[in-house]
Amino acid sequence: MQLVRFRHKGLRQFHEDGNVKGVPPAMADKLRKLLFALETAETPEQLGRFPGWKLHSPKAA
Image: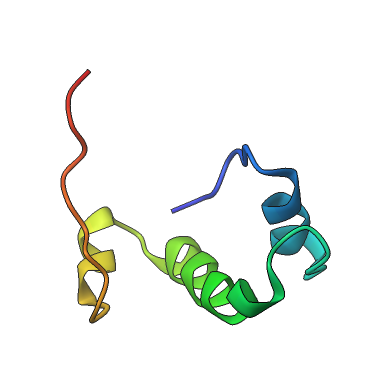
């Protein structure tokens, strides 16, 4: 899945060049793993493979 937009400027910067300035340093490793999983998954169902991730279906608006 391709990440298209980021609402959080620090998270976008972290994703683009690894700069942790805009995100909590304690969360950097977890965010790196999460972004990697989101980018490498081809379908949302593939994200369910990760233990501890409490995924749920999106609610209709």
